[in-house]
Amino acid sequence: MKTLTIPVNEILESCDKDRLDVYGYKFYEWIASKFNGGIIVEAGTLKGRSARSFSRGAPNSLIISYDKHYRPWIKIELFDNIITKIADINEIGPEWFSKVDIIYLDINHHGPEEETFLERIEPHFKGILIMDDINDPDAYPGLYKMFQEVTREKHMLPNTICAVRGTGVIPYGDWTVKIDEEGAPEQTGTWGRQRYRG
Image 1 (cartoon, rainbow, N blue to C red):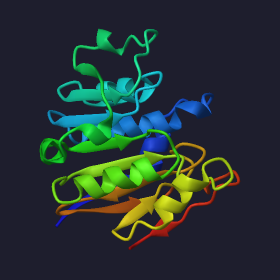
Image 2: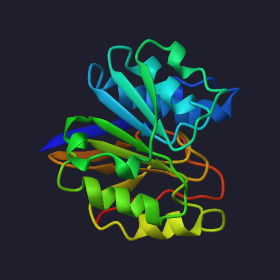
Image 3: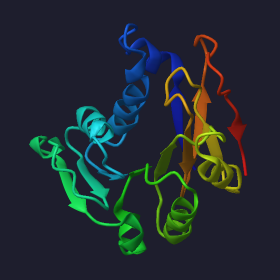
Image 4: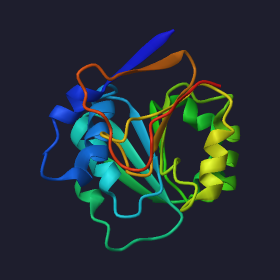
């Protein structure tokens, strides 16, 4: 087994304390740096902020950002290592994901499309999958329910370093994840930390 240890305090210390909104993006930079030189897939481009964070953390990686919709205001193609593609992530051949190190799944937040994607990649993917907004049953009840029902190893990051509505990390293949909270402050806000094991 390979262990990815996520050092909460180290990530927190690297953040600009006056900009709480950047904390999740610092986690993306950190995790990307652990796979620098690999392939990172972002499913759901929107404004491209996550892809830019992966690019900053892993300048030698290839970042491929998929979105169903053309978004003309997105300028992430200005980054040398980011490619944008207009495509439904659930229409990509699942065996291709065997080559990918990190998948960031941030699509429609309803649950069924995310569940379909997880089922399709299960036999092929061997890396780390990240999902945002998985711990807010009021805003995203379908996504919340879907994440609760994942039966494999899964973790929710402390909200001090992730999206305010919760960031989940699911290891595949030979990977396991350990969250190291030594020295980290208590988390704040209404969405609590839970650690899941399927």
